[in-house]
Image (cartoon, rainbow, N blue to C red; front, side, top):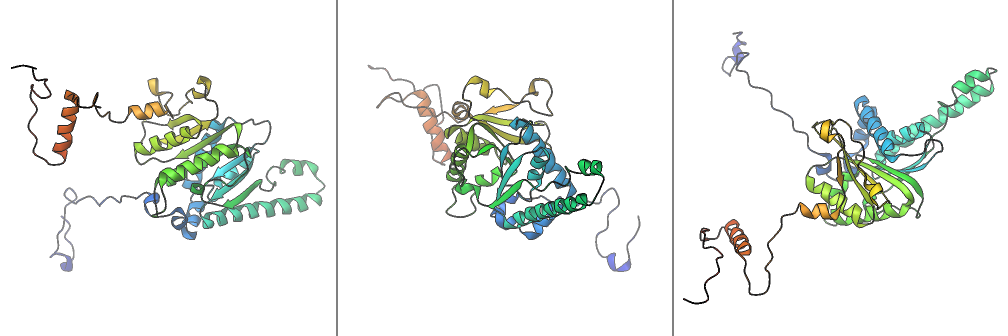
Length: 341
């Protein structure tokens, strides 16, 4: 053993084999800390935009969302970016040659996105002025793509109140790590079901027929996936949830893929990543029938005055859960009495 100093001898010391492990730090979900506009303040927005790991994750998720959109790369598309944050996903859309409009509830995140777009615009203007004084046209052609100004626009808006755009405005829609915020209530007047209904109803309106929406989100419970899928189906969307890397706790990603095709061709499963064998394609259909089948079936009485054995057993189980004294079940429970003695 290596003894500590005299001032520490009165305390407890451990050998290398008996020293306890440091306590694990459990990170709470941002959605549980309050409204998104309060969580993504100026400090958090700066940290979010300067983290190389976060930037890499955002680019990877956005690339996957654009892949699931199946956009025509031969021409630019008009894409709505819901929960655009600091504009990382919009930058990926620009690199693919698309025009985009981003909305977010955090003004600080939008400020970061505007600063990024302003720097890009200034660089494009400076590069254009230098190119006019340059006699070498070949160098100007090589740098033309890097000197283009931003093709995006920004708007401060809460998606839970609906999307304030004209009908059939956008060719497609993406959302990265924003949809799960609608499943939480941060004040007395916020109802998750109503906010989801307003969001999906307006999204159904602003998308052009034949367009698609890919919304990536993080789940806390399976009930949230059912709530989101049922609401999207109720307003008229078809599609479901694509799960990438379903066997990984950290790399698992959920993508809600929505469209307007209600026939079987529109409901074919999307290719999922990170799965092998029978799980190579993972798709959770957004059907009301499948959602209802997961709910517990409660026995229903056949007619008034008739009590089946299943109904009696269910009734007794409910009484037991309430702490009441209930007779034990036997082979005579629910047994029909003879008409005569």
